[in-house]
Length: 108
Image (tube, rainbow, N blue to C red; front, side, top):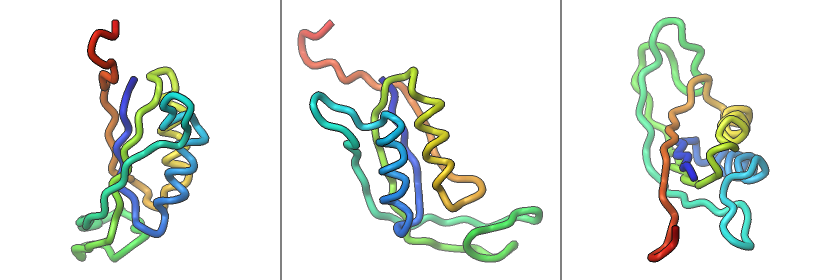
């Protein structure tokens, strides 16, 4: 299993959660679309050449964002990341993926 962590403006969080869930993220036992979200503040300064969805080039910006975390089978990575990026409003979203171990005690 892998985990996706992605930062998204609060107003767009539901769309990203739905998209990654539809792509196969967040399946745990008999549940789908499982994720964890935490509110926070995203900070960035658009550089020359950027076409920011929020703010202006050269001006520091702060946005109410949500950190979304969800696990998915490793072979679904491309589909999950593509789904997230397709609905994310930023041209260059901040995200990361990494392997996780979800085995319980005594599991192989």
